[in-house]
Length: 433
Length: 180
Image (cartoon, rainbow over the protein chains, first blue to last red):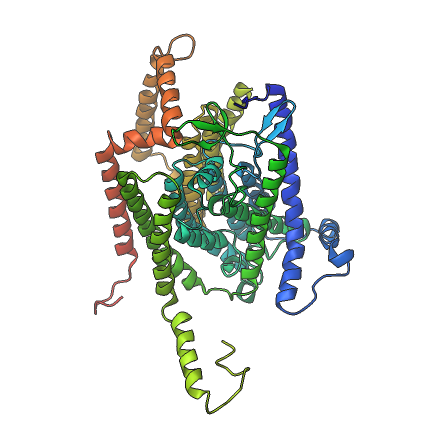
C-alpha cells in the first residue's frame, strides 16, 4: 500500500503559498486571453478577422489592452458617492478571483516532501464555498450602479441584483441534484464519485446540467442574460461611469467568473480531471492511503500517485474547462439578448419549479435503486441516465413550445410540398432554416 | 495564529455592529451589517464549523442583505429617519428586550470553568468529531433537523409559505372583474 506521506507543516504552508500564486496567475492569464479569444472567435463567427496586429495572431493584444487601461485617465463623476464608487469594482473582483480555490485541477502530485493535493484548498464545504462567495459578487455591481448616481447605471445595478438573486435559487437547486448523487459537498469527492460511477454526471443528471449551465450564464451576466449592461437600453449599465482600470476590474471579474463557472461545470458534470475510459488515474484519499477503488470484496485497491498521471489529468481538466470557455463565447455570439420579463419568467416560473421537480425525481429514483440494492456503478448510472434523458427531452419539448422542433418540422413539410413548383433551390427560405 | 484571526474577526464584527447603529445613511449601515455577518462567519470557520459559516454567508450576507439593499435603493430611503430617533416608550422596551436577550446568552457562559471550556466540553467535542467523521459536516446538522426537530422544521417552512402567500396577495393589484 502506498504511504499517505503527509506534508509537514512547513511544507504545507510553503506549497500552499506556491499553489495560491500559481492558480491566481494562471486564472488571470486565462482571463486576459479570454478577452482575446472572445474577440477572435466572435470575429470568426461574424466572418471577420478580429484583432491580429499586435504580435503573432494578435497574441500580445491583451498586454496592450492592459497597458492602455492602466495609463488611461481615471474619471470620477462629480455627483458620485465617492467611497462606494471606488469600493464597487473592488467588491466585484474579490469574489471572482477567490472562488477557483476549491476546484481540484489534477490528480495528486508526488513530491520528495510528500503527496500534494492539486487543489488550492480542499475545504470540507467545497461547493457551498463557491455558492457563498459568488452570492457576494452582486454587491460590487449593485453598489457601483447606485454610487455612480446615473440612472442607467442604477437601472443596471437593480437589474443585476434581481437577476442574480433569481438565478442563484435555480443554481443552488440544480446543484442539489448533483450533491444527492455525490453524497457530500466537496469537489474532490465529486470527481471521485464520477470515477466510481463509471460515467460523468452529465449523463445521469442531464437536466441538472442544463439548469446549471443556464443559471451559470445568468449569474455571470453573460449574453443572453446580460440585462444589467444591455447596451441598447442602458448604455453599458452599471459600469457606465467607470473608466480605465476600474472599468477593467469589472471586466476581469466577469471573465474570472466565467473561468470559475467553466471549471465548476467541468468538475461537476464532466468528471473534473478524470480521463475518460481509463481507471488508471482514479485516485482518492482514503483512511488507509491513496486508493483507486474497491474490489469485489470491498477492500480498497491502492493507487500510486505519479507525475505523469498528474500532468495527463491536468491536461484533461484544461481541455474540459477550455471547452466550456469556448461554449460561453459561442453562446454569446449566437443568441440574442432576452427581454427583462423573459429573464424573470424563465428564472421563477420554469427553472425554479423544474429544478425542484427534478430533485424529487432524482431522489425518488435513487431511493428505489438503493432499496433494490443496485450497487453504485454502471447500472445505477444507466437507470438514472434513462430517467433523466426522458425528463430532459420532455423539458426541452415543453420550453420549446412547438417553435423550433415543431416549427422546423412544419417548414420541412412546407418545403416538400413546394419542391415540384421550385425545383433545385438550395438557398430557399425553407432550406436555410 | 488562531487567536490573531479571532481578535481580527471579533473587532470587525463588533465595529461593524456599532457602525450599523451609528451610520447616517442606510447603505452604510447595510454594508457594516454585511461586514459583521462575514466576520461572524469567519469566527465560525475558526471553530471549524465550515458548514455554518458557508450558510451564514450564503443566506444572510449573500441573499437577505442583498434584498435589503434592493429595497433601500428602490425606495430611495434615508432622508426621513430623524423623526424615528426620538427616545420614547418603544426604545425603552427595545433596551429591555436587548438586555434580556443578553442575559440569556450570558447564562450560557456561566457554566464555563477556568480553562475557558465547559465542564463536559471535551466529551462533547469528541462526540461531534466522531459524528463529523461519519456523516460529514452537513449530515451532523441535517440529522437532528430531520429527526428530533422535524415538526419545528416543517412549521418554519409552513410559516415561510404563509408569508410568501401573504406577500403575493398584498402585491397583487386588485381587480373587480376577477382578472389580474
